[in-house]
Image (cartoon, rainbow, N blue to C red; front, side):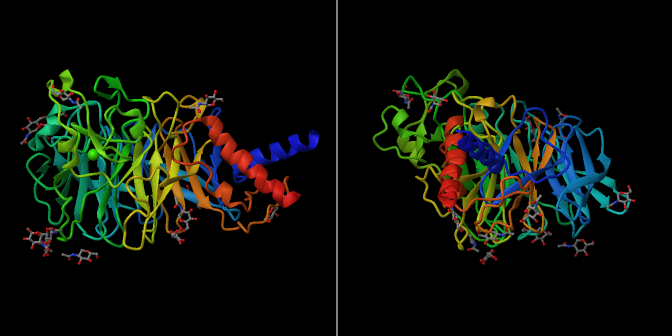
Length: 479
Ligand SMILES: *[C@@H]1O[C@H](CO)[C@@H](O)[C@H](O)[C@H]1NC(C)=O
Ligand SMILES: *[C@@H]1O[C@H](CO)[C@@H](O)[C@H](O)[C@H]1NC(C)=O
Ligand SMILES: *[C@@H]1O[C@H](CO)[C@@H](O)[C@H](O)[C@H]1NC(C)=O
Ligand SMILES: *[C@@H]1O[C@H](CO)[C@@H](O)[C@H](O)[C@H]1NC(C)=O
Ligand SMILES: *[C@@H]1O[C@H](CO)[C@@H](O)[C@H](O)[C@H]1NC(C)=O
Ligand SMILES: *[C@@H]1O[C@H](CO)[C@@H](O)[C@H](O)[C@H]1NC(C)=O
Ligand SMILES: *[C@@H]1O[C@H](CO)[C@@H](O)[C@H](O)[C@H]1NC(C)=O
Ligand SMILES: *[C@@H]1O[C@H](CO)[C@@H](O)[C@H](O)[C@H]1NC(C)=O
Ligand SMILES: *[C@@H]1O[C@H](CO)[C@@H](O)[C@H](O)[C@H]1NC(C)=O
Ligand SMILES: *[C@@H]1O[C@H](CO)[C@@H](O)[C@H](O)[C@H]1NC(C)=O
Ligand SMILES: *[C@@H]1O[C@H](CO)[C@@H](O)[C@H](O)[C@H]1NC(C)=O
Ligand SMILES: *[C@@H]1O[C@H](CO)[C@@H](O)[C@H](O)[C@H]1NC(C)=O
Ligand SMILES: [Ca+2]
């Protein structure tokens, strides 16, 4: 009995795999990580940190949405791999910045956004200061979905992609492409002379995109991908289907370099059409699979109109779907383009807390997700909270990432004011180390590598998969 308790305690430590660095998570936050990875806290006490980027000297640039400022943090790394902030400086003040950020090292230009506009500055990385502010894109004010994510393309230099979300849960203005809402556009910054107006300028990548908060460019193909926060409180044929529908989406928006894609500039369904996550829970589901776009009931918000499933089948489909209400906020590819990291901020419109984690989606060499549209297991959880039932109160809530040249992921959590660092455990040899070793360890089991599936909705499932999965792996090593 004592022996098995001892093992369970040990395994909980393994599941948490925290490096023995100085900072601990805030409050009662208890992170959990998949085998083969480890984590540490790099910073605490920031004002709701959101967008992250590196400057050309490896400083971490952070949008602190709580203050509306942009701060630069010089990092220090000790011999044991513990990364800490040595010094911090506020770079942009008083601009109500809330999410979007990008740094162009070739031009020495820093970009960031608030709800209404995106801005650019010349950035002096020696002085850590800015000058020559210009407004790049304007006229995006709106309520509800306030982030205006910006992406600086590497494969099409000079292009900035900007996401302008819908103005409410179901927003009728999104049915008019000229409104600019619920769309993603690209703007050419080369020799910019005047401010772009979102509605009338730029290249339309897609519309009918409810709130495409995460944007990424595939490093090999140059394809632009977005992750979408889909609708809440959805009703179909008078049945409330919000518990497990619709799915959050991964959408392909085409290319910026002139290669044609039928997706580019097309309508992706919202607000008339949303993607199925759990077809069984939908009435009249004969032709609906996971990922199929289906029509929702009319509401006063939609001017008492609706569309049919046949209409929805003609709108551009998403490429993958994820568990409803997980709220994906960022997507970033690794250097090879064969892995996409996705942050899920976590649900509010779900009966059980879901999300609150960092997941991984495999891509092929051709730059496509490995899984089909109908997959419910495309996203594998890497870093989350030990007990989702404690969320959102005692959980970190991942927002944005910055990936360094070693493939290490810096991750912001607005709710807890923290920056985490998630790294591959290069020391993972498949051999469990001694239980009292404070450094991160990993078990050999492939079972624990898959930790939890994207479909997991229950904190106890997380516990069973990670901890008990590790227990079996551990037992088989010990016995
Ligand atoms: C930390 O910053 C101080 C100046 O603020 C500098 O003198 C020192 O060298 C830095 N330490 C490291 C390890 O980077
Ligand atoms: C948003 O930007 C436009 C164009 O620059 C400006 O006219 C408008 O006053 C701004 N709205 C808000 C709410 O700041
Ligand atoms: C951006 O504008 C510059 C200057 O007009 C032009 O040379 C370049 O081809 C444009 N880039 C794209 C991707 O359209
Ligand atoms: C941008 O402006 C610079 C300086 O005027 C000029 O040398 C360059 O040719 C311009 N580039 C394009 C693509 O127009
Ligand atoms: C700016 O946005 C408003 C809606 O907020 C819209 O009515 C107006 O037409 C837009 N301006 C331009 C120049 O498109
Ligand atoms: C765009 O980039 C892709 C990937 O590098 C390349 O295969 C394609 O030929 C390019 N298209 C154009 C029109 O240059
Ligand atoms: C893309 O399509 C447009 C319109 O059909 C055509 O003019 C253009 O040549 C095509 N570009 C490429 C690179 O195929
Ligand atoms: C769409 O509206 C029609 C006519 O009002 C109604 O019969 C149908 O049930 C609605 N369909 C959906 C999916 O809400
Ligand atoms: C992703 O690929 C790796 C091998 O490269 C594999 O171990 C892992 O199970 C794959 N994950 C998914 C979700 O297919
Ligand atoms: C990127 O993903 C591929 C495929 O899983 C992997 O082989 C490679 O090591 C990853 N790169 C980094 C820097 O982690
Ligand atoms: C823990 O294990 C690591 C890797 O095997 C080793 O370098 C370190 O010295 C060990 N620490 C303790 C306290 O045993
Ligand atoms: C979640 O786990 C609890 C036990 O901790 C159980 O009562 C509940 O039914 C489970 N919910 C689901 C959806 O599996
Ligand atoms: Ca869609």
